[in-house]
Each structure stands twice: as structure tokens, then as C-alpha cells.
Length: 121
Image 1 (cartoon, one colour):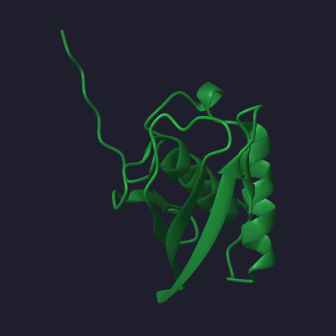
Image 2: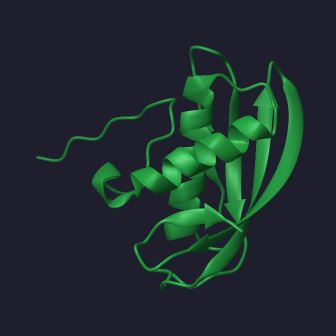
């Protein structure tokens, strides 16, 4: 028997245990520093989408996120890169964020270190 479910919230395309917590924490701080108007949950979801996009996303393939509580949402689109990315890999991602219905875009460049952590370049 196969059971499938749909959800209106973005979930990582991989096990959360395979996503680097230091990467997520670092990008929460980077996004918070951009003063884009996201709350703590929004920041976490956007950062998780960014790490999933950097780690597993094909160039141009959007990774969406949504916070049903705030109504804010967005997507992260990675630039070119090798999958899976080896240490030393750098990629850029484009965030399109919708905060209280207003769209904004920002680009972040990130590099993966030997421990597998993505950090802002």
C-alpha cells in the first residue's frame, strides 16, 4: 500500500538530519541582517529552503517555502553547481520573498567548507 499526502508548507526534499544545522543558523542570521521583514519562523523556513537549494537544487529549479501563520512565502533558486557539491563549492541563490504581499528579491553567494557547512561568501 502506498500512501501520499499533500501539504501547503514546504518540506525539505531530504531528511532534515542531512541538512547542516550550522548552515541553517548562519543563513537565518544573514537573512535577518537583510531587514526584509521576516519573523523568526519565516527566517528559519527561508534558510532551510536555501540550504536544500544549495545542496540538492539544480540550477534554475525553485525550492519554495511558506509560513501559513504569517502568510509570508518565497522561493530560492540556485545558480549553477555540481550535485552533490564537494567541499570548496560555491553557488549563488536568488531569494524571491513575499512579505505581507510585497515581493522583493535578493541574491546570496555561499561556499561549502570541508565540514559540509554552507556559509556566506
